[in-house]
Length: 249
Image (cartoon, rainbow, N blue to C red; front, top):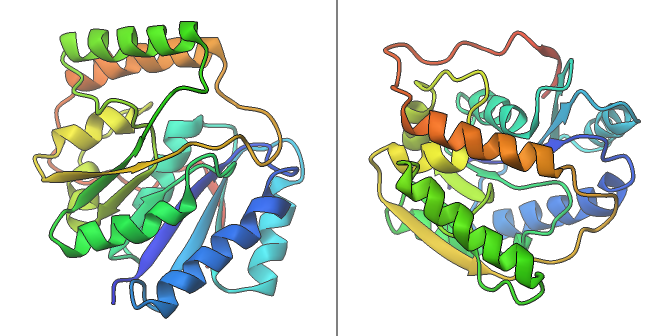
């Protein structure tokens, strides 16, 4: 059985985590019981410089249940950096990682299919939204334009895929050779020269709290996607992030 680390970036999630952490733990237990994940598997919660009680919650979860691990970053590094730091920390400990946001808008039940796809030989499995009929006409239209424009600029993105993604040890090793200060992971995933499978799911409303992606952050992501398309891998793997101030394992 593979050791699975579920990597969850957390920024000011004090309202959300009490609702979603038990769901993550339950799913991890189900994957273990089904023989899809080993008993050494963990939920890795990455506190991205939160200003609320997020780290205190992560510490309490870890103290109560060893299946919860934690990383604390200071200062706030941004969503993509938090995911990257979590993946790189898990690289030495896990056979497989699945990154997913703390709000559980991504369907956690799709993890079973992701793990099965991995067992079929896919080192990368991307979760893809099955529909956008709950979005406004403006949001659907701009999303189509965004993906088309990014692909035109050379950032090969998978349509309707964000950061719900399985990556195994081979994929993480290749990813570790990209050293951007601000990575754009959904573009990097398609540059690793590895087979990619997709799993469709329906996206749900946030469990609690508010979306951390403002219009300004979305514009920055667009810029980073173009930059990522031009980035070359380095000879040596990415060193540990100096902004990790605490580890709970």
